Image (cartoon, rainbow, N blue to C red; front, side, top):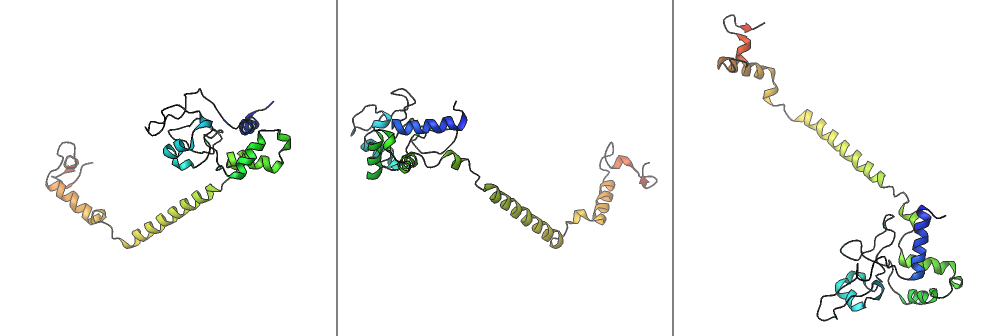
Length: 204
């Protein structure tokens, strides 16, 4: 019984054999050109004229649209959660077209390399390649260490070169307290309420 990755891989191979992936109804996800220079009609995914693709999807070149788009445009995406891209990865070269014509017959006549070439024309990566470690954590760790080291050097430089503000000086703080007492700031619950002006000392 096929499960998980094997099931999706089998589905990909089945899609190659069928030469088209139609996951929706005829009008769902289809292309409807609105330009007057092209006949206004609905095309199937695997039967879109090259003129329509050149006008509405020029980035595709002569690549085949084989399924509905996952977004607003037809793009190729390697993603395990979306295993059936809407567009083939490879362009339609004469060699590929000849191989596709051969695949319509008995697949026993195809060599292993030809089957691999058919797969690579439709998909850029295998599932093993998609899920393989990329080493991205090394770059993230490098950036983290670099920022931490730069911040540490800056703090050391700042602590030893930039003068401290005068408000952190104890003499200045005592002068500020004396000024506030002279102005009788906070006579009810503030600073002045905690000072005994008759005995010239803080209340106990």
